[in-house]
Amino acid sequence: MVKEIIKRYTESFKLQVVREYEAGASAHSLKQKYGITGSTTIKSWVNKYGRAGYRSEMTYIQTAEDQHEFKAMKARISELESALAETVLENRMLKTTLEVAGQALDMDLKKTFERQS
Image (tube, rainbow, N blue to C red; front, top):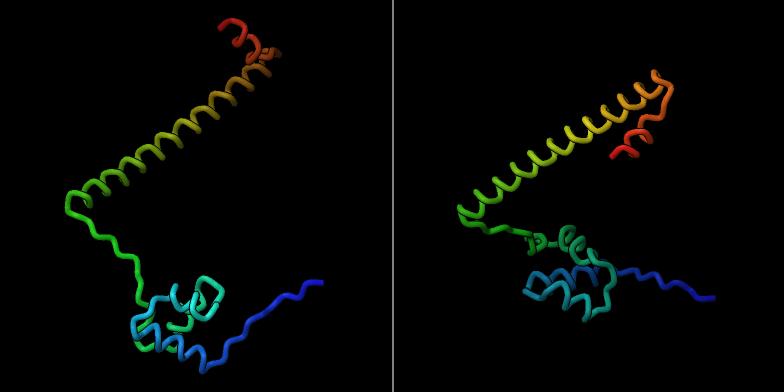
């Protein structure tokens, strides 16, 4: 039987890691140095015990041209999504019309039109 190892860190240990992080050490190097598992363990300690908070944040730097292109792409995506939704609705309407007409004529119109084309 394999026993699962559950690590519990003391508060003084957590504070030491946070101090080292705030002194400039990277979270990755601290994880390796102390064998800390978990992808967000150090981040949660820094948020809880740290003075300045976690250092890394995602920042996008764009030129004015990039921003304009990004807005144009978002608009194009919206247009394409609307066109797709309209096409799906039209397709459903045509299939339903074909089924209703087939029931009214007591024929399977799908098979009839498939043979002709």
